[in-house]
Amino acid sequence: MARKEKKPGETLFEEYYSRCWGDRWPGLRESLFKEIDHYHLSDGLLQPYYLDEASLYPARELDVQPGDEVLDMCAAPGGKSLILATALQGTGSLTVNDLSPDRRRRLKQVMEDHLKPEWRENLRYTGFDGSLWYRHEPSRFDRILLDAPCSSERHVLNSPEHLKKWSPGRIKSLAPRQFALLCSALDAVKPGGLIVYSTCALADEENDLIVERLMKKRKGRFVTEPALFDRGEETRYGRHILPDRDRTGPIYYCRIRRLNGD
Ligand SMILES: C[S@@+](CC[C@H](N)C(=O)[O-])C[C@H]1O[C@@H](n2cnc3c(N)ncnc32)[C@H](O)[C@@H]1O
Image (cartoon, rainbow, N blue to C red; front, side, top):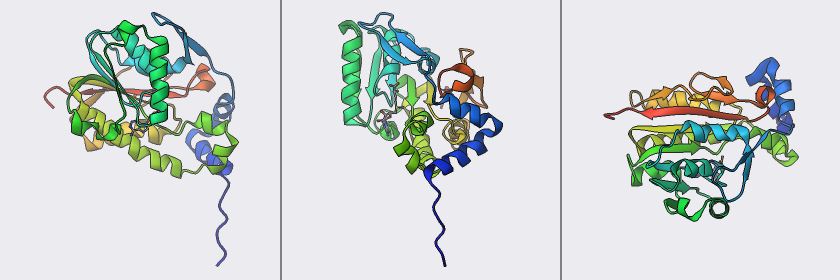
């Protein structure tokens, strides 16, 4: 029997995202090649840090207050950690974690280059697998930012090498990792505490469907909350900032509150 010819990554990518986004896909695809609006993060920093404007929102939605115990579970290279550190101004604690040693080195450099020494005193650098956090420090944090590893379609589309190798298997292998990280965050946040789950993915499987799965598997332990800022588009559980309409993103985020008494 003749072996079925494997489709090239470019074709699989197009088929997959056309199916997800329908008529909107050609415009959305085109917007992923365009320059995006950059934001100069500078308030209280030693020097400005440039990041995609949409990236501000997951960190801001965590609504960090002075004195909070905060975990940035997947922190490198550190743009969002700078926003969290700025909100704390050296009070409480900020644990900046990343599994990759190389990226962790970059994260440390970013923190040292941008934060004044007194805003670094409350920092703790760690290199754990976030999906196992719940074993070591259950119910420890007031707030957790989970900016999960994701498909990053903007990057794939702009890299012929990655596009050639793309298959839906990429999403299938990322989604369980994202889900495990989110379950762990739910156990690591205090009852009554807040998690912001975010990705830079376009695929629903990495965004709302991860939250939906948590609703099924951890029923009654949390609620999703409306976003504080009216940016991007509302989704079933969170918001999605997309570059065809907002000239920034993609960034998805959802606010998840662990229930008191859990
Ligand atoms: C989307 S990036 C984070 C970007 C970062 N929040 C920022 O704003 O600069 C995802 C990060 O997750 C890290 N990562 C992947 N799997 C992880 C795991 N199981 N535990 C902790 N970090 C992980 C990757 O090394 C990568 O740096």
